[in-house]
Length: 134
Image 1 (cartoon, rainbow, N blue to C red):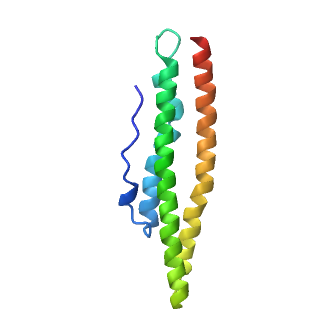
Image 2 (cartoon, one colour):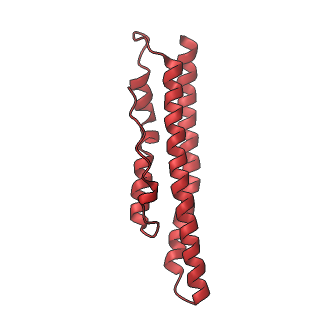
Image 3 (spheres, rainbow, N blue to C red):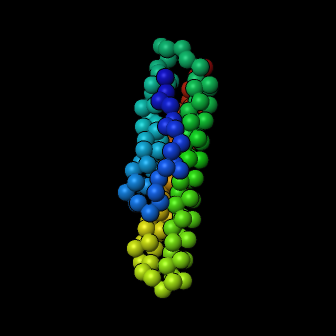
């Protein structure tokens, strides 16, 4: 049995709170971080009979859902922080802290690409092997 994806709480995060943003993003990446464990639990050794193809499809569906949640969160926080930077610049206020936060949130898009690539490789290798066996 695979662990289910967490509910979408991306709208609950205050994008000006970098700690809250990173905490939720870390929680949303837990499934990806534990993908090998998830696959081993869902598709055990040959002595067990499982529907490997269906299991792999279910895991990929959960991964897609989590990716959509993460990118929604990242994009929303980028937009909100960009508006804050623009407003502070227009008013002549201090925008360096907000600009720094915006840069850190933008960096998460690159991290997301790396996480997705590693997870895709792992799932593809394991699921292709299992589907061929059966």
